[in-house]
Length: 342
Image (cartoon, rainbow, N blue to C red; front, side, top):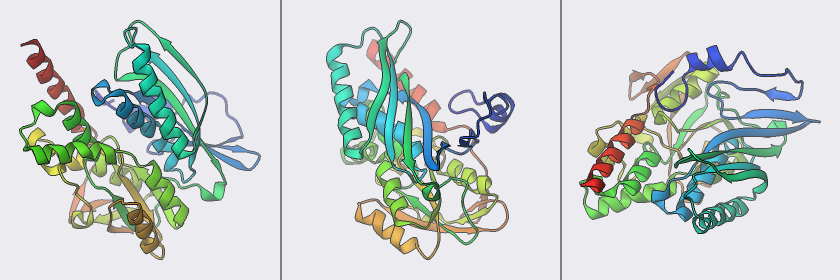
């Protein structure tokens, strides 16, 4: 089990997977390592369902933090190919969190949900001693539709093109430079570009756009362990091989400079907002065109081959296992605390 972040596959297989409660016929897809969601079959209707923590970062301001938190919890259903439609959310807030700040947070989440067509149907809101930001609850998102429209992250097929939106390190770049700007020795223009990457750290609309085109056989959001982790997860899940080139993958302004300042590899750092898709080559141009028409940069990074493993720029890669942005966050937070107490 990793010290921080999601549990690894060995922990999942030993402790989680054997103990799943009742065996019900309406569970079409249960917990599967590397798959972002489960699926219920309700009289022939597919319901994609996913649960995630609610992460609220006060340093972003509660309006921006609300949008970021909501997009995070909707992403795992969006990559199913079914648009998120319903949400249940629970807040376990620290006692000092005041009513006005909560109102700002909640109204921001409401507006984003309404814009995405998501209805909030139930939840729980309370303050409890011992709770603290950023992890202040949990949420379950659902998407309802046809089984034929489901897209699984392990559905890659030999011959598919591999598409990547936005590129590496988007979330880590935007988040860390926004929360700890004083810790970065970057010129003003570069810092502003890096901070703006946080606005790219949502993949919900991109996933809906790509799925609507058709021809997408696998879709996965590159969160913890970044694009290298996502490549390995998608390839391993489908039992195929990826042959990829970084030259064809977008690299957004501010990412490289931020990674260099932190001494981390952006390809291994969390990049929520970036999608890895495998697409029938007959539909690649249509998917690329649809994404680009929405302002989303996307590149055709390579192809799905028979075999196993992932080659990037001709070199074999493995799953990073540990996301370097966790340690970077802790180091930046400690340095900030020292400066504040000085």
